[in-house]
Structure formats: structure tokens, C-alpha cells
Length: 258
Image (cartoon, rainbow, N blue to C red; front, top):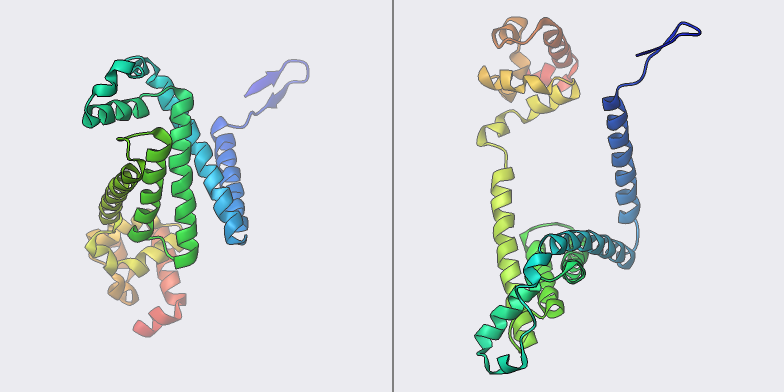
């Protein structure tokens, strides 16, 4: 709040938090509009855009990593001529170290190919199969791992075998991560008894009172039987109680349950 000494007018400056929230909301709207537009495009157009976007993101990540690890790259110089007599295993290890410790441009290239191919294959698989599951994720990871092996020169002299091996490794890792993430993202078992309750509370803007329903074991089957005293027992304030009871009274299906 600032005062103008000449006119005596108080100028109220909007809080910075409101401006930030508006920018975030605007960005989400633009992103949603872009995704909606992209979903209506032919498959080649969508795949090209998604691949390019993924490649740009990967290049940025790789460039940053290359900058942070630039000091490490000097520890892995190119093998001297006399290193030709090294065993294939030693040469493979040296190339792997160089692949992960290259400069910003090298890492940007490697990660751009890896993330771009992954995003593109995932897009195509989702459009063709109509679902995004562990199989699609593993196929995309296989392709990105194989391409990463080819562009980075990682592995031994047989590039075809190295590409397949790297692709299989990436696919197995991605499949494992997908399953672990899927397991932890699943709602607790008791949530199936509160689905309708959760939807009701969310529609009323009272989602923070879901824990009160769970504490009192007020499951979906009890919704038609709810009374003011029952809601008061689980420590829900008067205002929300009125909204909940009014919603139940107006809902035809819940009225039938009574």
C-alpha cells in the first residue's frame, strides 16, 4: 500500500501471490488448449511435434548435465593409438564413461535423441493402441535406449548388438519403474468405499472433510442415512453440514436410498 502525498490517494498494490496464481492459471489454459489441438491432428503431425518437444527438453537436460560434468570429461580422454591392444571389455568401459561424461553439446545431443525418440514412440503407441500402459512404455524405452547407444557410441564394436542390449536394458528398467509407480499411485483399499462421498465433497468444495467421513466410517452406503447429528459427531462445522444435507436431499438417487 502506497500513499500519494499530492492527492492523498491510497494506492493498493495487488499481492504478488495473486499475479503468480494468474500466470500459472494462464499457462495451464494454454497448455490444455495446445494438447487439445494436438490431439486433433493427424498421427504424423502429432508424433513430429511430440518428438521435437521431447528432444528440446532432453537437449536442455543433457546440456545442463554436460556443464555440470565438464570437469569429468577431461578424466576420460580419447584412447591413444597404443590402446588398440586393449581388451574389448576395457574399450567398452572407456566408451561408456565417455558417453556419460561428455561436454554440454555431446550430452545435449545424446539426451535429445533419447527423450525425443521415447516421446515419439510413446505418442504413436498411445494413438494406435488407445491406451498408455506398461507395454507401450517398454517399447518406447527400448527404442530410446537403442538410439542412445547408437548416437553415443556406447559399448563395444558391434553396434547392432549394443543397440539391442541397451534397448532391452532401458525397457526392463522402464517397465520396473512403471510397475512401482503404478503400485504407489493406487489409492488405498478403503478408498473404494468413499468414491461417491469424495465426488460429492469435491463438487461442493468440501474435499478437505473427506478425512472426517473416513474417521467416522461414513461410507458411500451411509450417505442416504446421514443426519445433522451424525455429521456433527465427526466434527464437521454447521455450514458444510447444511450443504451436505441439502445435496443429499436434492440428489434423486440418494433420496431413493432412504
